[in-house]
Image (cartoon, rainbow, N blue to C red; front, side, top):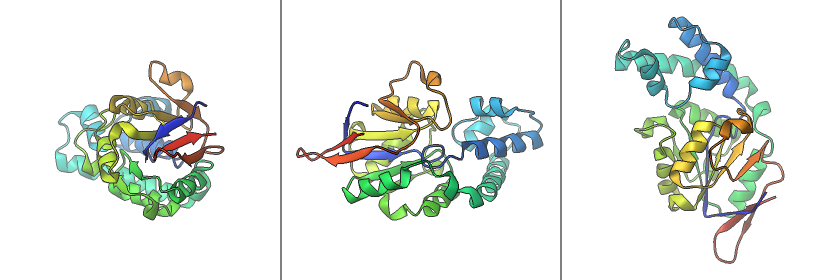
Length: 228
């Protein structure tokens, strides 16, 4: 891997720090089935990405009122947390916690930038014990436009006081990698959810199975270097 210079790190959450995307896919499949859409897991994986309310509006148009969409989204997320709670520790992406602790020890500004709702974000962040290491957390309730719009990354960078283009992004999804490209940031993709071939046409600095073997070094110039 070619070393990457940066001034701050922005982490996606689901599929990046925890290997939970199949839990989300199963929760969506069950909820959509209750709403009359018979999706396979493969179809959910391919098509259901982004902010919940946007997903529901895209799938159902104005069939549901805004309040009903909020209720449906909340039910789906509550089911996800119930399923995942006993499995969280064993499904942390390899090396993620050690990497975050090392970066924190080097005073790297870090933030979470997730398309998930607030309850899910802090459910995982607190489950991993990393809240105090993150300078900012941006969740779906704080953004107007979901990924691939780079708004979530823009807010996260602002929250840690680092220019967006100087941030290194860790992502797992095609949509998230496209958002990183749209933000003008280098992106490292964790192949926990998608195959490398699915990122064709996107600018990806590196593909990784997990965080093991990655190192962070502070440079004399004041920025940092990601290497292995």
